Amino acid sequence: MTNAKFDPKSVDGTEPYGAEKSHQEKASTEVAPPPNVIEPDRESTPEGAEQARKKYLLTRFWISARGYWGRGGDGLAWPCSIGLLTLIGINVGFQYGINVWNRGIFDAIERHDASTVYFLSAVFLPLVLGSVALVTVQVSVRMMIHRRWRSWLTTAVIGRWLANGRYYQLNLIGGDHKNPEARISEDLRIATESPVDFIAGVISAFLSASTFIVVLWTIGGALILTIAGSTVTVPGFLVITAVLYAAITSSSMAVIGRHFVHVSEVKNQSEAEFRYTLTHVRENGESIALLGGEEEERTDLDKTFANVLRQWALLAGQHMRTTLVSQGSSLFAPVVPILLCAPKFLEGSMTLGQVMQAASAFAIVQSAFGWLVDNYPRLADWNACARRIASLMMSLDGLERAEQSNALGRIQRGETEGEAMLSLNDLSVSLDEGTAVVKETQVVIEPGERVLVAGESGSGKSTLVRAIAGLWPWGDGSVNFHADRRLFMLPQRPYIPSGTLLRAAAYPRAADSWTLDEIKAALDKVGLDYLNDKIEDDGRGIRRYPVAKSSGSRLRVSSYTIPILSCWMKQRQHSMRKARTR
Image (cartoon, rainbow, N blue to C red; front, side, top):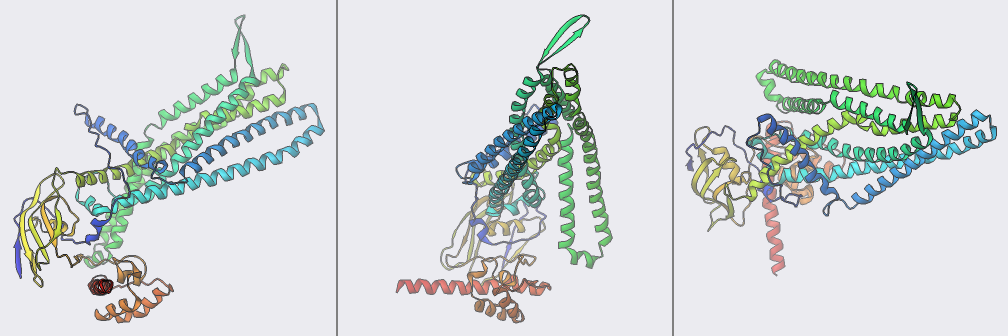
């Protein structure tokens, strides 16, 4: 047995860990290089630097998200987007038709014109059916964009996250990327759904406002007021009132809800931390039970959940204040135009139909101008979620930039000379800030040789294993393997993938890489022949089976079967090469 000792270079308190070399062979799905780092102004205060960082986070999100409509994006992105805009425009036309219908029906009622009332009643049904059909198709197209955009961006982010072991390296570097699973699953969903709704809402509001402002201007005309013996004419008074009304409500919402984004962001982070704590307890249930740590875990869970409730209470306060504005606005909006039109109606210069058409148009214009009032909470929630997923993107950018940079140096990977299985040639491993943990290591391991890596805590043993596995590529020197051999790293804790027993036995290769007979033979060799029936059930797609409950069985399934199957795969490939040579 060879002893390899390493001198401590810096503190490294993590435990030994290994992983498959194939992680490094996976490429990122995002072709473009990571954007350059935007350095904050050195003269700015910490608060100013933080604000600048948060503003850049939204820019960083759009740098990746807009690629959905780019050359490497989804082929249906533009057709669906154009189709959605077309449906919105047609729907505004139906709204205008219903608005004109309101005027006609009330004028007919005022004149006691029964035939016109009956005719307009018959016309109303096609208008409603057409509008309902358009809205239904519009919702379908909008949700299709939701689904496809989320699918495209999730695939891109997961591809970058899994590439070159970055999902693991994130645990070893600083940055705002805690709970990446929650950011990818929940925050990314909201970050892609809300912009589609916002853009559709803004365009619909603009078209509605443009259309019905003309209606208000035409119907309302000018308002003539007599003040202190002088006559004052206010042209387009209904339009001016609608704009002022919307400006007051929107500015009130912006002032009252100015802390909404921050509170929503903190709430989302506290929810993610609570989910992580629950998952941590579930995954380490046996250790907690053996140590009797239930009370301490309960205390920690109570503390984490109390923070969630505290943040929810703050968010509820924000909702209450914004509801005061939105609810008050919705109650006043239908009444204001009627009160403004009442003098003209009473003096006979406006018909009842014109009053009702003006009231309907005023409500639509006010709703369009008050879009911010109605959507401010969702806008704040999207802002927080987009920043969280952008923070993860920036951390991945940093890792990818370090991979492409020569500032820290990179560990080369090659082939050994002669029959050596593994050789480390002048290997030095550096941390992300450049500190060397392992320096100038020289080791050659021959076939059948066993090596013990010994050293004090923090001497770099775990970092060395990460470098050999390819999880940590920064440093100098080279890690070389025999050309006809494959590295197998055994994790400290046995890992079983989710799914069937067949998938677990074949992991990390696909389940169809071997025949059922080969997998059953491998299980026989490691004393797990009693699982062969379950393997056959999995092969026929009958059921999903809980793989193995004892740690020993899990170790044999996850670790011992893989070298056997890998050896058979090597023999199969060798036979195929010989057959081709003949």
